[in-house]
Image (spheres, helix red, strand yellow):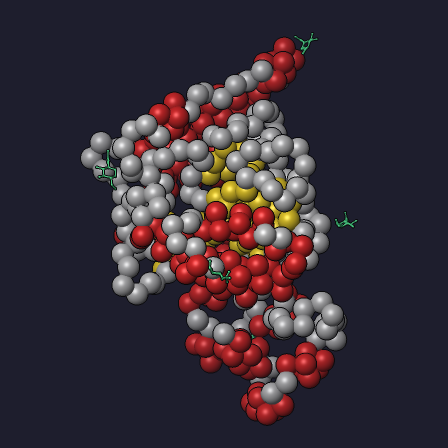
Length: 371
Ligand SMILES: *[C@@H]1O[C@H](CO)[C@@H](O)[C@H](O)[C@H]1NC(C)=O
Ligand SMILES: *[C@@H]1O[C@H](CO)[C@@H](O)[C@H](O)[C@H]1NC(C)=O
Ligand SMILES: *[C@@H]1O[C@H](CO)[C@@H](O)[C@H](O)[C@H]1NC(C)=O
Ligand SMILES: *[C@@H]1O[C@H](CO)[C@@H](O)[C@H](O)[C@H]1NC(C)=O
Ligand SMILES: *[C@@H]1O[C@H](CO)[C@@H](O)[C@H](O)[C@H]1NC(C)=O
Ligand SMILES: *[C@@H]1O[C@H](CO)[C@@H](O)[C@H](O)[C@H]1NC(C)=O
């Protein structure tokens, strides 16, 4: 995957001579020492295309350069913030199809949250929807969002997947491989499941400390963000692209054939339990449910809540019902706090979420489930 970028970067210097030269020399080290004086070999010896190195490529000038950029690169560049950060969500038909009895879809509720949230509207510009089937892609394009069609040979990822079915697991692994690819291209990202409501701008709450490689949500938070044996949840996390996180995702993906019957999230938990964080020198922060909450553990404070994930829930219809209740609660909270009366201040402290009844009951009824 290095080659297209090497070509692209070289061409943007407008000299075929440079291109040939680079290929002849063939050594990445020399390449780096020429174009990237700031590059430190001790930092990322195997990953030449870090943020700084990519700078010259971000403004492709000639059509030749553009032709060589593949679709993913274009999609990422379009959705990216200046600091090479994107928001990634994976969408399939089950999230965009409205059946006869439904009034809305998961995708619509997800987008509603960006509209109703505080300081979240602008983030839609940086959201890249990764469609795993044609219907999802069409819907995404119809809504004029940033869309990328993830092709997979031989598998129809369209329908709602029964929890832990073969296709469900296959899709999860395809997703992991795709995310690895994004990291390799030097993009950091927030990954969000579509059943996560964005009520406030998470970038305001996430640590800006560059040494933190991965900040990941939890089902239950016990107070110590650095403890390793926690119930991490891969439904929402912020990951920085670097050699260590690429190694983590590479290892994670390499486990796919050795982990029959396990969801990729459980495989990651297993890797962490096995000490991969220490081995790779990763800095992983578990996110407090006070801010990054879910149905497993509600945020205790409406004034702090940033995201709400419909975790601990088994079907899409249950999620849709209970997430709509979350948005209603949120609107009620905003309505009350918009009146500047002091007595209200106490009301906000005691503001409570509506019970997630459909989700709580979803475990006892039927098999249909999340994707
Ligand atoms: C690059 O683009 C800028 C503005 O689009 C133009 O002024 C400049 O001449 C271009 N350079 C080359 C080498 O094409
Ligand atoms: C990237 O830029 C966005 C928008 O300016 C900002 O909110 C975010 O904190 C930045 N991310 C990092 C890691 O600096
Ligand atoms: C970032 O985190 C590292 C390691 O946890 C710490 O040593 C450093 O002081 C932090 N930097 C800032 C600016 O907080
Ligand atoms: C895969 O599983 C086998 C048997 O359980 C084990 O011996 C092997 O180390 C595993 N491979 C990896 C890469 O973990
Ligand atoms: C707010 O609640 C605190 C206790 O939590 C109480 O002491 C205080 O009097 C309350 N203020 C008002 C304005 O009700
Ligand atoms: C649950 O799944 C099993 C096997 O996958 C199936 O036989 C059963 O009918 C399903 N039950 C419901 C209520 O869908």
